Image 1 (cartoon, rainbow, N blue to C red):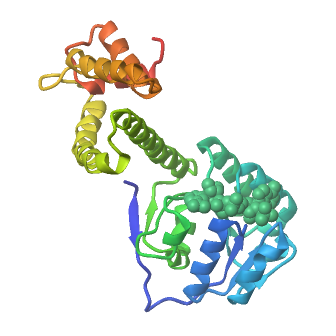
Image 2 (image 1 turned 45 degrees about the vertical axis):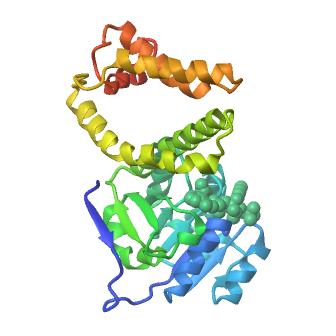
Image 3 (image 1 turned 180 degrees about the vertical axis):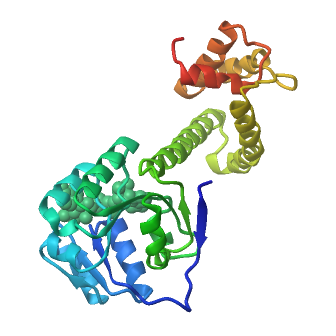
Length: 304
Ligand SMILES: NC(=O)c1ccc[n+]([C@@H]2O[C@H](COP(=O)([O-])OP(=O)(O)OC[C@H]3O[C@@H](n4cnc5c(N)ncnc54)[C@H](OP(=O)(O)O)[C@@H]3O)[C@@H](O)[C@H]2O)c1
């Protein structure tokens, strides 16, 4: 992954550079606390001013005008609800952004991230996009995980300060949309996985098995998924879909059982229906002897 991964902070050269945090929701506040804990002079701004109070009490400087907050530091970390909030705030900041590095940790689509990057760089600022892949309590700990893409020189320059957020900083490349691409890919798996577990819980629950009783068995499947993903990735990248050990026609029978058993218990079938429809489409296109990775064709070209 990426051109380089940066780990930890170099305490011997650490100079506690100033940093500004724009947006003090749950995540922005966690970011500001992590910078303060690492000794960085931290300036904060939030649309609703009273949210700055706990940070002020912890040693931050609170500004009432966002342009003043941005002017206070070379590095400005933005963490707002969405891109429309970021755009509104950039409108208010005006040319105070010129000469700064904006690290935007607001979740977005790749298109949004690239548009914000274009806007920021057009007024002479440097832009790094980022996505935080952990919940707020993990920010500032060794288990934090943040993905970055965009201006790699700016990222390297501010590496030490950003290391205060904890864990490993992953740099994905110069395209500012890449952090969002990886974010959405990872969340795609997260939500599909949660939905699949809940469907399974409803299915086994209909026969009196509690979710907790089923959990260790669900975990056995999770253990299988790691190596399975590696095989699928190899197949997808190679464009080869061998069904020598398990083919789609055989797998369709499993999916028929899951759908039929769900239906018989009045459990929603949307989850297994999705997998079954994909497998049926691949078989219909003449790939019944191929492995499951063949489904990528239908995902890439629905209706083809
Ligand atoms: N919380 C998490 O666990 C988590 C994890 C990973 C990533 N993230 C990402 O982090 C970002 C922030 O999440 P959060 O949990 O901090 O959200 P949040 O608690 O709902 O806070 C939202 C922030 O956005 C500000 N805001 C909203 N609309 C605005 C506008 N039009 N102009 C100016 N400020 C505006 C809010 O200001 P007010 O206080 O004035 O409303 C607040 O500071 C999101 O992109 C989220 O996806 C969050």
